[in-house]
Image (spheres, rainbow, N blue to C red):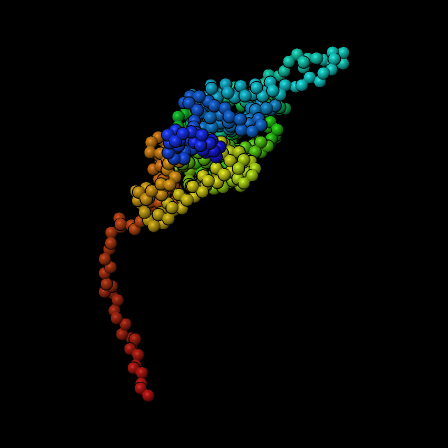
Length: 398
Ligand SMILES: [Zn+2]
């Protein structure tokens, strides 16, 4: 909105020929979705002690504070040095900003150590949460884990020799099994694997971290079968993983259990969890797996867009249309300028195919079976006509 207002103000103050030059040819969302230059990691404050890192593969959510660092997704492996540097800078800056204040007592009544700026070093990375097993979400796991630390106490530290080596990595069980098997991706080093996996509907840290509760919710059959969203309850920020990507249709990885209905259900779940500040604007803030920061209105719009396309495809599937016919029907035409693509790893055609397949399109039951041979039915000559039954006598006329 602000962009439109400033363009209008500029137009009024310029002579006519200049007006024609600055008039945009059509509305565009480009400035809102612009990614940082390739290879650069951009830091955006989300709210309070929570930040988002863009440009390192999937978006990364970072919580810094008294308890250390918690990260949702780790970005690509080749950018993990830059991610680590950005995370450490955020944590260092937080520590400096929150240095204990001097109480102002004199040396006779109290030590003046705190006034000599002797402060504890920044706390390390303690938790890495993975929303899926994609390389652009888990690629940085190994390096970030090794830079971190898990705190244990009592007899735990004695029992598990490597319990304090590196940060803990949490993910859904299907992420762990997929990464451990190296299914569809390069072999994963042991230090990159989740150290804790959950297999129920949700999982939570057993205690506050940096002053808030943190929960993971499993989104079954959405982008894949192992997606999680992460709710930071105090700052009210939701890391959505690949349920949403502001610049493209959602990637539905059918081979790994993804479905269109699972994505829509996941978006509805996020909307159920979020509370707007005023008329759908502000309030709960969401960091999608790819693209810019969003709020409830953006998620609702994205959900509506997917629901409309899903319904159109479903209608054609029920009519028994082939995939080629559905693609030719241009079911996403009114959204392709904003989300579509004809190039890259996830095209509009890929998306429509995934929607079609996961709605049961192209399954055998929809087509008449033409492979079976027709066997002519022969008349049964073994049965003799029943001679015991007589034709009923004609009714007598009165
Ligand atoms: Zn992704």
